[in-house]
Each structure stands twice: as C-alpha cells, then as structure tokens.
Image 1: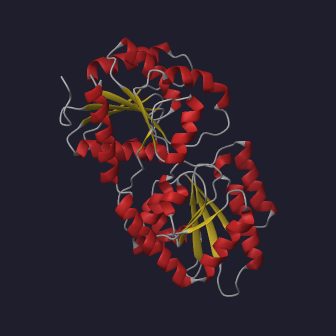
Image 2: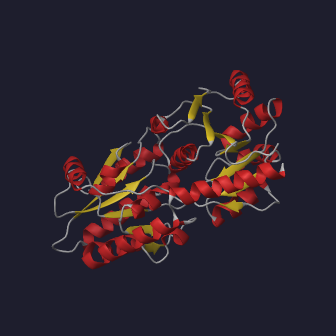
Image 3: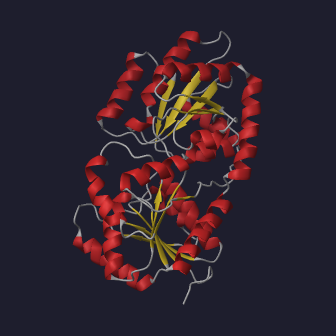
Length: 377
C-alpha cells in the first residue's frame, strides 16, 4: 500500500544534534513534520547532542545509539531493532558518517527507500573515504542537496548518475528583542555606539576565521574617526591547532579589544538582537543556516561568495571573494560607515528571506520528495 502523507512515517538519521547548521535543519524539519501530523523519529548514531532539547514536547521521537567507535555491531543491532519497531515509510539520512550503519540496518530490517540530503561542499578528510561512501550510495533511492552548488559537488564525489533534487534550507521567523540586545551587548562588552559584527560557526579551517581576524586588523588601521566596532564569534572552541592559531593571531595582531570569542551559545535570538551586522568569512559552505537566520532577523550581511550564499543573499548584502581579507575589510568598512546602507540591506534581506526561505516551504518540499519516492518504490 502506498503511504499517504498522513500515513508517512519518516526516520531522520544523523550522527548527533550538535550545534551546527545541518543539525538545525534536521530540528526544523522534524518539528515541521510533526506539526503536519507526520510521524517522525530522529535517530542519532552518537549522543543526542545539545540541540536535542528543541524536540521536547513536539511529538518527535528521539533515539540516541551512543555509538562512539567504529565498527560498532551493538549499535547496528540496536538500529535494526529501532527500524523494525518504528516501521518507517522512508529513511532520510543527513550525513555520510551514518550511511554505513543505516544502509546495513535497513537491508537487515525494513528495506524501505533511503534518501540522502547533502548539506556542505565537503572539506579535508573526505577524499580518503570516497570509495566507502560511493559503495553505500548505491543503496540510496534518491539524493537531494541544499543548493545547486552542493548538488554538483556531491554528484562528482559519489559519481551519482541520477538527478539530485534541490531543497533549500528554511528557518523560522526571528524577532529581535531590545531587552535581549542590551543584556547581550553588556555581556559581550560592546558599547552603545559600537557596531557589533557577529560571526557564527564552530571554528574549523573552512570557516576561515583567520581571514575575519585579518580583516578586523585592516579595519582597525582604517577605522573612521567616530565609529568603533567589535567582532563577536560564536562557536565552540576546542584544543585543536586551528583554534590555538586563531587565539594566537588575535593576540599577535593586538586585537583583544576588538575580537570576542563567545564559545557555544544556545541564545542565538539574543545574539542576533545584539548584533548590527552579520559577517561570514567561510571558504567553503553549502547553504549556511546562520546566513538565513541573520537575514530573517533583519541583519545586514557581509559574506563570501561560496556555495549557495550568492543565490541566497542576492543583491541584499555585500559579497566578497573568499580568502581575501582585504576585500572583506573593505565591505565591513563600507557597512560600518554607512548607516543608511545597513538599514536598507537589513530590511531588504529580511523581506527576501521571509518570502523564500521559510520553514513551511522547506518542510513542504521535503514532504513532496518523500511522497514521490514512496509512490515510485
């Protein structure tokens, strides 16, 4: 029997609901499905993660296998039992690391269509795993990507011959709060007259926060006489060489008064309320949720031309080439010194994002995709 939308049972699989754009997409998708009466389960191969609490009270089932090592046959058996019990109509996997487990468990259990969603452009470490993921991709019934650029990259990586659907990310509306703005700016150490640039992302090489630091150094040299600024970076620091390099760079450039590392934050509405401008310095992205969230909150955007960013931002922000701190500094200087431009870009970006990147549209696109694959199975 073909599953109707009301009878659809969707299992969404990923490694963990850790802080990140892809994970927030999964949360919004699962919540949106549940709101439409679709039975949904989110399966985390590892721990539940920091974002798991956002599914509380939504009706979405959440299972964490707590598998933290390779070739975990206990986790595979657990996953097989979950699928047999839940009986999904379709499985939607959102990261490569989960694919060997979900493909094997599905073959041993329900043998329903597996759909893969590609989120990023891939970065270091994936080339050596290409043969493995090409093999498991043979068991995908269909693939989608968050942008045309991401679709092209993953088709090449997997040697995928079939079409890849494009399902753009969606974000909920965000209302900036003056009370939260005051509190957050005081915590960050940002004066009333300072322009606060906000960057968001767990520090990794593809985020290129060193370019943002260099741009801030250049901007300090060119700083207009009557306008000061602060750059706040929200993201979970760790003991990696990359994070150590960033901290040393801030120190060496004498930017401790300009750059604030905020660590992991679960109060993004407060940060978007506190900020005056959103800045993205990445050298590789798919379709960053933070860009869409910032636009939805009415923040003007300065960003690099990577992945789906140019298509998402269009003429509603200032775009520069990746890996060019001088260009980034020039764009930041322009938006720093032109009050009217900040207001204009913020309003235009918000209107564009509300019309194009809402959660309702994203969930409907996923539902159409699921239904099409189930009906053709």
